[in-house]
Length: 206
Image (cartoon, rainbow, N blue to C red; front, side, top):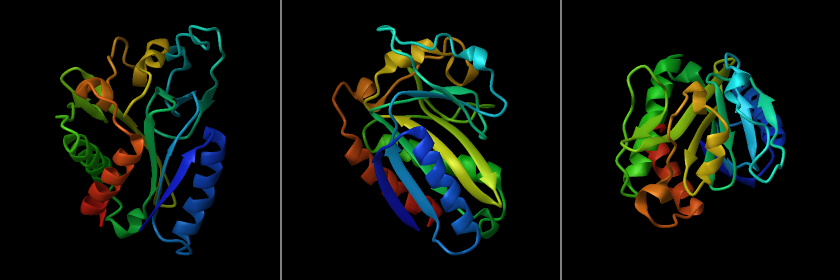
């Protein structure tokens, strides 16, 4: 398994990279791969999502923000600087072809990562993602092609949480969003979170 840090890249560029990698992993040409990155400001909407959950397409300075429809689970979410995005490409043929287990394991990795920064988090019955007592910390939306996973998660590290006020996050009106930095009261560096996440991911997925 390899981890590749893409830095800050556009959603479209990352999607192209994902689509290329899924095929290579499925064919056994490349090892299982996890991309870690940040995106410029963008809203995305999953295949079953309601674009009506995007309340406005501009920010408070009247700057337009793109909405991209993609083939993943979940509804409307926001990506932007200060948010750790991860796109794991794992071969589920080698992992019992169990998408539900994959989702629960990914939640576990995010919870143990948060714990290492002093943040207690948990699952919510009937929902995918990671929550705290003060709000939602991480969103998950995945796709599977040829039994290889794509898309993934977004963990708020030092995200500008005002952007979530422009949407119903994950189709949940009034859902408060939080970040590691907002919960701890200090600025947490995304580079440190990437390192910890990779360690915790290897613990769970090998």
